[in-house]
Each structure stands twice: as C-alpha cells, then as structure tokens.
Amino acid sequence: MARPQTIAEKILAAHAGLEFVEPGQLVLVRVDFLLANDITAPPAIEAFRKMGARRVFDRSRLALVPDHFAPARDVAAAELLRVTRDFAREHDVEHYFEVGEMGIEHVVLPESGLALPGEVILGADSHTCTYGALGAFACGVGSTDLAAAMALGETWLKVPPTVRFEFTGRLRPWVSAKDLILHTIGRIGVDGARYQAMEFAGPLIEAMDMAGRMTMANMAVEAGAKTGLVNPDATTLEYVAPRARRPFSPARSDPDARYEAVHRWDVSDLEPQVSLPHSPENVVPVTEVDPVPIDQVFIGTCTNGRLEDLRVAARLLKGRRVARGLRCLVIPGSQAVYLQALREGIIEAFIEAGCIVSTSTCGPCIGGHMGVLAEGERAVSTNNRNFYGRMGARGAFNYLASPAVAAATAVLGRVAHPAELGVPVEEVA
Image (tube, rainbow, N blue to C red; front, side):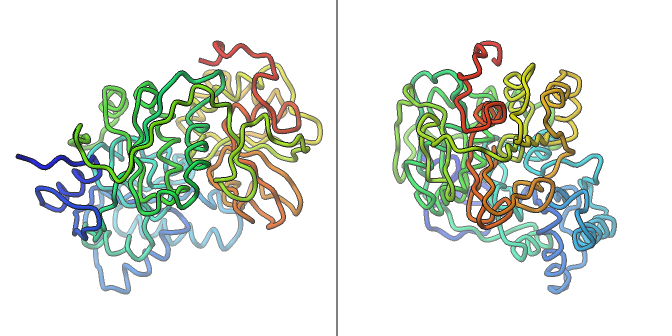
C-alpha cells in the first residue's frame, strides 16, 4: 500500500524517481521550469560559464524576465539587461520577455501557462513560491544553484516538513487573501515556518480565486517557508487548462497525510490587517493603526498587481481624488493585466483620481526606481516586505496592506479602513 504523503512530498518523490520521501531527506530531483530576472540572471550566467556549461539543458524550460530595473533606470541597470538579453539570444531561450511584452515575473509566468500543477520550479527570486498556488513545488534559489540547474536540469533539495493551515468561517467585508496571509505571518512570525512547506486549505481557500491563492503562496517566504502550496482543484484546472504550454500531472495531499503541525483558524472576526514597520510579522487590525499622515501609496507588485487587485482599488478610487500631498502609484502586474484594465476603464479611474500609472516593474517594491522613499517618509504598499530600507531610505516607513486598504488610504491620507469611503462591498465583487 502506498504511504500517505502531502502534496509537497508527492511532487518531490515523483521528481526523484522514488515511491515516497521523508522530511529532512536529501533528494536529487529533475526540474520542470527555471526562472531568473535582470538582477539574478547575470550572476547565474557568469556561474554557468565558469562551470564550463555550453548549452541550457532545455531552452523551452527557462524564462528570463527583466522586471526589477526595467525599463533601465541607469547605465548599470542597462548593462544587467544587456547581459540577460545577450544570453537569451545566444541560447535561443524560448521565454525571454523583453520590455513591451514583459511584466512582473510572478504574474507573467502563471498567466502565460509556464507554471503548472505537479511541477518542480526553481527561480532565482525568493517569491518563486507564488506558483505553489497552482499546486507546484516552487522555491527560490541562489544564482549559483540556478546556474547548475540550467546546465543539468536537476537539483538537490531537502524535503521540507509540511504545516497545514486551515481557514474557516465567513470573511467580513473588505477582508481578502492579503489579510489572511498577513494574519498568518503575524501569528507565527517571520521564522514560524522556517524551511517548511505551508499548505493552505479549508473552506475559505477552496472558495478563493486564483489571484487570492497566489497572494497567499507569494508571502509564504515571509514566514520563512521553503514554499507555500494549495492543493489543485476545479478552480486551479479552470485557470491552468486554457493556458498550459505543456502537459502536467497534478498532485494532491492524501487525506491521512502526516503534517508537522495543523493550524485551524476561524477568521470570521478578522478585520483588514496592516503590517507595521519594520517587519511583516508586526500585524495589527487596520482600526488599531495610528492616524499618521502617509506620503505615498503603492498598489502593485507580484503580491497584489493582478487584475482582481486593480479592480478593487479602482472601485474605491473611482469618483474620488487622491489626498492632497500624497502620491499614489499603480503598477499593473503585466502587459496583459494593463491591457484588460484599460478595456475595463480601470486605468481611467486611477488617472482621474490623480494616481500615477506605470508600466509593469518591480522598481518601487525593492527601492530600485519609480517610487523610492526619502528619509522619514511613510508609505502604504501592497508589496510583501517592509524591512528597513526595503523601499528606499533606511529611515523610511512602509506599511503592508491589501489593495482595498491602500486605496482607502490614498483617498483619506492616513491608514484607513475601506468601509470609511462608504462604497458598498457588493459593488466590488
């Protein structure tokens, strides 16, 4: 009889050619897909060449997405982009996303059908765990590890123990996936899932759309996790099937799988959450945040730059104005998101409200460009990290929140509950 396993264990066992694996076991696994961006690709390319590799193991299983400093912010960034572009041309990399067709990597790959259920996906970016929302074992690695995988098509991994998080109850108005994951990190801490697989489950996850699931999985790394996963279901397949670029084999946890721990939380009383500076674990309800003035609001990133996120923010901003003295940046997660937002009038609503709308980039999230904070400035952002210096000056302050809280903040000039704007929540559904 087959041994009961979690989804993480099943995927790793299948890719290691084993019947089953144990937490803590080192396994050599084949990889299905690889990813690098304009910051992490150049050192991976250098390591690839130093090890004497001649060709990428499979040009159709590597994506190079120049999204952090693109469009080039300066000469140094232009050089990183050139190195990445030249390597893509040299190896005829099938999935190279040039400016004009690119977007934020963790938005682009799922919508392009390049991240699929049941796969092992490595990315030289810590938020590669986003693809766990599709039922993949996806994790960030260093550029050297990526270089070896680019050459060999395989990698060593230690099997992580799995911790299951079950969410039950009925969500209050304006509470979203971002609030659930902030609440989770607030309860267990930034090292509460260190080198574990976080498995998100329960009725609320089953009812959640793919955008929400990707938000949840995206921030698993903020709890120290190796990856975050959602078991594939009809919602997953409805999203994946029309997009998939190659065959895939979904895996699901067995009902009697063994977990390191199981957390069951009724979140019926949960309010919208805010993570205070300077750690994602400093989480409080929005109603408990001091009414300090906010200098900048940023809506976007690989956490909350999807169409569903922009719809919520635009509905709250439509017919209103950004508070005087506050700047509001909106960055769609991809060209496809941008185009659909244009068609739906979302971009028009942002611009009429006084927002700045930019081409897809990670720039503000990493304090790289197009929204860097000065000393002492305060920002509310939908991104995933708020450490010292994350969005610019070390003395700046970054509050993490959902698109709804960010939009309400942009209008009122202070951290605000979306309900304060008086918009019926059903109008945003």
